[in-house]
Figure (cartoon, rainbow, N blue to C red):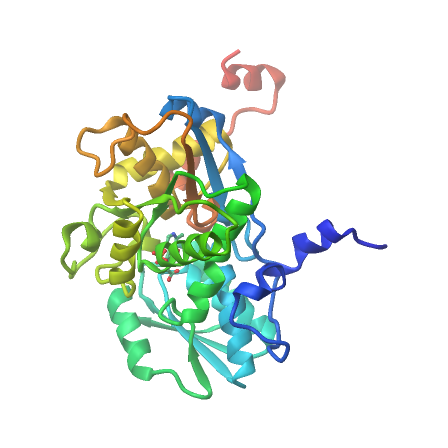
Length: 366
Ligand code: F0G
């Protein structure tokens, strides 16, 4: 069966879609799982919550092949690793990078080595890395320790680091900004996203700037990043030695792209802020119940942040005075099924009733 051009575009992945903006050539072997082209969903309930005729869109990165935004960067990083004839890739991870690296390494037929903080990886992500056949090493330490070890092991001919300190990762991830502009016709006014190692905010900044330079958009949005309260080094402007948060994906005390994140925020007249674990879980539940979008806790930091901007006098960015009819994009970075632990408690309260219509009617509350 013949595909139409637009159908082909949907499945061809970010390198084929944005080749001219990426560090690839005709001799780069492309390793892709059809990542990118994720949905930018208009959210009526969130828009109502903000008011002032504003439109809120959610960029749903959980629909990527391994369920997170990491796949955009990984297709480029692994393709470039293959171009360099690497036989293995290595990464430290809070979970999603390892799931993505493991999948793309499997696709490329090379080894993936993962160094991770023991006991701090969400169940779904850990399962993914094992399923894709990665070599897993758990350390008694946090993500920052793991990344330190990966840096020391170093980049070499046979061993390519695929954390976001690898510029190919950032290059791939900037395509999310391109897609947003391609759909909206211009950049939004505000862009909210979770911040952990600060690679993604760096990538969005690069993407928005590049599209503006190519006259594909007229502006760069105010970039507003949200860290978890117990892991907010950029907000407090100091390294957090023992970061803690339920949002394990962003449990990071010394982000690698710290300076770049500050530059993105300053240059775009944005802000950095933090949200509590309680706010994160409330936003995760709210988004699932009001907009039908189920995201992992770290991803809900952008939504919790939006609520803080709307409601709190202490927010680093107050939305009460933003121009009417502003366009706001919130990136949600990973799928809810990756990290089910916070939800399973509610499931345990589900007790079976007798298999009769009457008992079921009673259980429904009819
Ligand atoms: N959201 C999710 C779901 C993540 O997995 C991460 C980072 C972030 C947000 C933050 O993005 O680091 O670019 O600022 N996860 C990394 C990992 C650290 O190892 O999977 P960032």
